[in-house]
Length: 415
Image 1: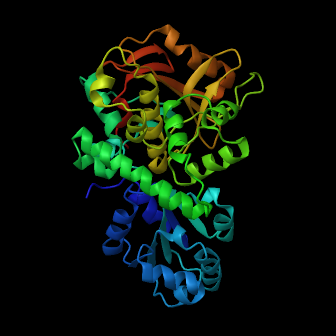
Image 2: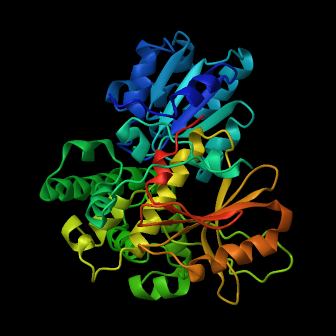
């Protein structure tokens, strides 16, 4: 089993929270991690609602089901029995013992208000995404925390990160199953089955409707727009869905962790900002599959690597935020006059870091215009800006502006 960097945060949450929910996409490794904790680190009884008999008991009498369980207990795929959440509230209010319930679920409860509200103040939520690049290589990444420190960035020894190697990482993505499937046809078969399972099971279960025939096409259209601004009106025309229905479908895709929109940063009164969401899926391999992209095609110089590379970096940042000490919020930056930064990280103190992604081997001053504009807009709150690029050297452009090799994203260690 490949160690998960979120394990420490999960164990910490279990020391003081009566209910901890480990959510994330299907097949991201939640059940594997929960079972590993049940046998070491957090000794607990493990049960799964994927078992029809267990699910039936939980749905028929949620209160009696929980009362019959010895603590601590791990309940896997809890979204299959939403009735449990109200019963959990009553049970926790009766006996508020830390670490009593560890839940796992493939649905984002923050988008299912009836579930999250019933356990407000009683439940800590952690998200387990597919493997990060550091997890795959056995390194605990400290990239985000290093960016927020006022001290100089750690040195990164140059590596020959070729376009072919990077394309391979993008196409594979992070789902654990992909670490066993080097063959392109076998990856495609898995992604195809994965999407079908989620759309036919999870989405239908949450929506309780059958008319979701447009979902696969919608997901493909979103993948094709990776890194672009969400245009509801245009997407509605392209897919032939009324805008209210389309918005509902987007929420369902987001609730299953397939679709992961990025909000705009607008923290300065001195700028006019674009405020629409940016379109991203939860995994670069999934997006590449839906776009018909494989390693060989992405390796070709004529193929634009930019959008997929930007998506890949964004997903790595999302993953690292989960175990970073800083825990910043993630946005993008775009002004009405066209200045933009791919990613803006803002910590709880309001300090700002900008990350720009360039599929180029020679970064120049033009690549830093957006970061310079962000620095001007945020003043003393701006810690630093970096351009991640396809080169080998750390290139300083000023005291708080640098170009870094793309692999610095997972090769700067924690500490």
